[in-house]
Image: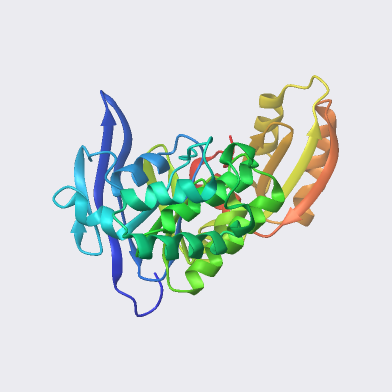
Length: 319
């Protein structure tokens, strides 16, 4: 949490089950006013379900949360007045223009005519779409639709903006514009709850990060605090061509080597946590070659969030 800021959002032991299948299992955290807080985890970790409960789209099976003092279970209308929600799925009408979409959603928020026109112009500027205001949304690229989706969430000047995987499936240039927009909004004082499975986004944007896996919040802190969980281990990243070699057998062999603490595998990539990279590297290369595989890329890295996730779960973040 940012220094000297009281929480504007507090989640208390949130649970959500669908039938007998639990999706979120006792998630608790607080977000300070003016903070960017990211929930980082793989697809299926429970991030979207958590945001859906916080935005009152889903009722918790147990637990509660407050946003700016309003309870999601007892005062959902109060919550909805102070949040903006940018869902993972595009929520726009493709056959009408960007401006017409914003006017429609602004009226749904209850904005009056003069205020609405001013807010539409303002948010189009924020997302850099003023020159495309009259164009039908169906003519927009995926990145432009994502940016217009953000504009909808900003119309009523929320105190907290929820962004659920806002850069999925878009080109790098559009992704860059969205990340820069989020940072600028935060510089202007907006509190942001951001979900992603992209480690680099969480690292770049966040004041603090909550790591989710299998419906649980397994770690929470600043990036520096989280990487301290890994300790002083070095990280060796190998890009490997297996050439028919048994992947599981190689991972087991590597894990048994002296100095190797953990091994994660993602397609043709291996990530190893080792006590001393210089000492362990030769044995690792020999083991890969003996397995009939071939090293095509080698990189020694300092601990990052990918390493933290591997340390906590035994799996790479994108497994």
